[in-house]
Length: 379
Image (cartoon, rainbow, N blue to C red; front, top):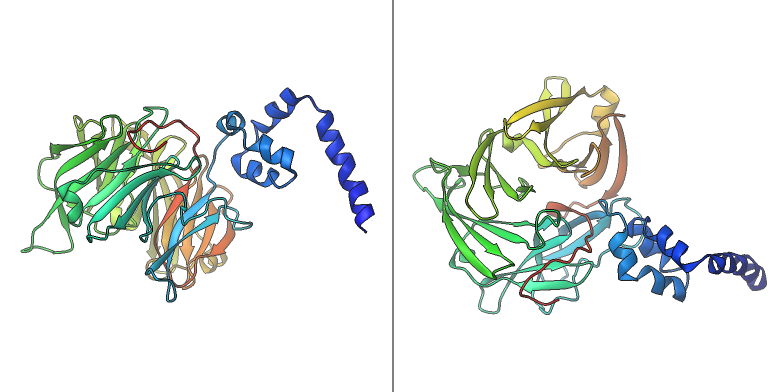
């Protein structure tokens, strides 16, 4: 059988070696990064070829998987970081333990934006510390300490290589007004970290009345065109640009507590699921006129009984992501938090994997990036 196997493999290798190197590089540069990772297993020469930075930088990037965490009864830390490929199959493309980081403490991935991760850990002095890293290139930088880190605040990451080669971290300083609902936090101002300067800058809020921020970490902030958008209690988003100079309130078509806000095809999307008596409706809105703050209803689907059985919601289950390039919605469903994708146009669902009953939010979509991001940290 060994000789038979060799007789099959050798012609294929020989055929590949006959191709001009420039042609092979041109072909591989058009292959998604996930496929490049699989091609590395073909041979040592393919491992070297598929690891070439020029090829990796040219390869088209798309949604590759999701970071999430699960409670652990046996691990020394409370939670274990996990990663699942978007197909739900194969070895995880990214090692979720991030072994290249020079820390031994438990890492909590709190945000992900265009290939960069914002990670939190607790120092031996019991202080919160933060690192921004790129798991694909293994570059990282530690954020300098700011007093607001010691309190329960909203912290989120903004990076868009099409806008700037530098990233920003937005820390939304909050006040708790105890004579009202103690679970609702009120925005007071924003601290913005710039990787270009390596410093935090505080900006007093210009949103007017102190807005109530959503306490649920499922309600992820959205970074678009150099502007960070924070969901708040009610039907609106708070927006502030990278320099803290432009402040806006943008109305949303539905209550933010019952909707998912994300990016698709370079625009803001709102996905809302409504349960009315025996019917379940899924509506998809898009902010087509950003300057005019006009949302357009793109899809309105009344689920059939068979679809409702497949998309049965329990507890905290719901929409956790939308594909950045097409109208494909990702949801967690059932007690085992099954991760599925739902194509809004074709109305077809696809099972990806089970995140397990010990799964804990958030579930962060990941698109690999080979862009050169500039910082004062380790490169």
